[in-house]
Image 1 (cartoon, helix red, strand yellow):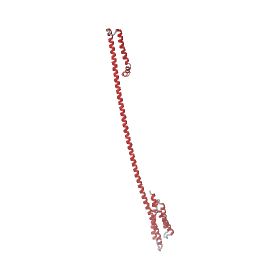
Image 2 (tube, helix red, strand yellow):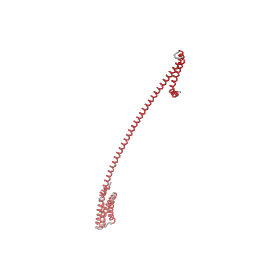
Image 3 (cartoon, helix red, strand yellow):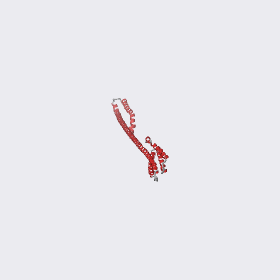
Image 4 (cartoon, helix red, strand yellow):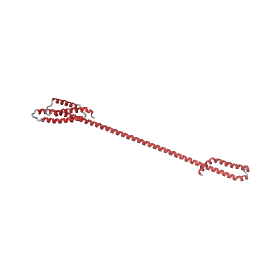
Length: 281
């Protein structure tokens, strides 16, 4: 019932209220006109009959007018209250939306600042890593250069020592082979000789042959194959004489062969140090 009054009832009053008021006024006016026509205005008989209906109608009209005014006042007050409430709600909603937008913008700015700081931090870390990597690479390159230099120095020293050792071994082998020849001649000049001088010279020569072999092997390890072959050819001539020429004078052919192989072996050592410097790493 209350819902009907607040919706349909109010709509009907708003739509038909003015017509009802007009009809009531017209009815009262009709009564007054009829009374005036029938009884005549101003007579005592007229007022005796019309006073009460006129008062009742006037009171009713006034009551309806007062109710209508009160109803319209209430409706106006309700409209004003509703409009005010809507305006307040609209303002509050607008303020909340603005505040929310401001907060979102502030949050967006904060996030953008954080992203910028994160990017800057990442770039800084990348720069530091690149700098450390460059330093490490430079340090490694320096170590490699130092290692190469040390290897080059070591190889040059080893090459020099091997060449000196090979040259000394060849010279000492030459001296030992000559001493063997002289010892044989000496023993052959002594009747009933036990060839002790030759045996001593042979033992010394064996020691020189071993030294030459060791020196040639080291040269082979260093890559000097021609020097290795030349020294071993010289050793072969001496070993053949020691194996098959015991207590016999060394022939000219053997001495000539030894001299040629000896000179070839010594010549193979010439320039090896300078040529090896360019190949050393």
